[in-house]
Length: 509
Image (cartoon, rainbow, N blue to C red; front, top):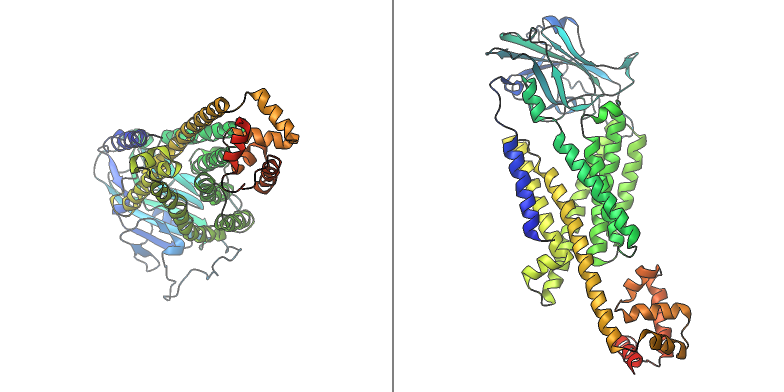
């Protein structure tokens, strides 16, 4: 992988993202500039004329997201009005209703088709504008939710006659488990009203479709590559990693709800996929840079498997808390990947006498170091953006695509280089040794079995024990046993240090 290629792709994507969205239209009402009023329960009269000074409402002057479990709401006597919950309890709490009232003002003429955009809302909900219902996703049976609808990127067209110049009131009726992180407005921003065309340009999800398609194609490519070259098992893991990332983005699209309306199912699938993504990255870098799986990766794999399976059967609230535990554990997993599987092998390559530029371009650890650095930088930018700037560029998504593309190019390039080197070694060895027929006669004269002949041919090609084992699907101990027998039959005593050189010399003579 040429590092210049990776950076060129990355900065091109960044530029298109930063400048492709255009400027905000003249009609843009940022709802987060207005205070929001919240109370437990729902009264239909509040939809028409809510009395926001009757003492039952709690106000948030500044709100970036408004999740019930994080609002610390108080009851009528100053007591907490949320039920207590034991951390990682497998059970949820009974659904409750909440009312959010958002008064706002319009100072300019409304467009032909105004639209409300919500970064997120859940779990069941209704939206009223100036007393009129404009969107309903309330699915109850006897007060119990029968189909959950926690959604991201919600776009609600508004009848222009409903939106008045001057004072207006948005009312949200929200029903859900008060201890679930999706009850309310999960995402910090944005929440606004603007022109329909502007919102559709800004949130059309075409970029997500492209990302998902690229990751899916790369995953299939790696599977096919492994099917042809079975010794390259890291291609199988890389394909699994690409498909996991593609599926994760698929579960987060808005249009997936057209296929699976119940978002309880979608979020469980999202978590299930997410738990195996970093695990796949650990296994991939283990195999690629160190040629074996470590006990740390195996323990982390058991941990992820337990979380993934329990997430399918326990409550959604448990799922969100389990995800928080996973996020904490993943910090150590990422540190393992970066330090143990990339930095240390990179340092070993430098100790062998290679130059830094050559190590970065022509080794697996060097290539991965460049790509992971891009991932880290974009993740830091997105974190700062979510806390302060609110551009919502989501550069990490694009850097993940760069990572997948660069990884594919790296594996293909390294495979070509490795095959070329093996062919050159094989050619040189063929020139230095007897012709193939004479070599086979030598094998027969020394009394090699058919299995030993097969291994001896691969030794002539320059493969070590591990590569031979991967080629013919035998364990290292079995290969070592056969190699020892070959050396014994050739009369080679010093098999550990100079055995292969003596073996080739015997073939030449």
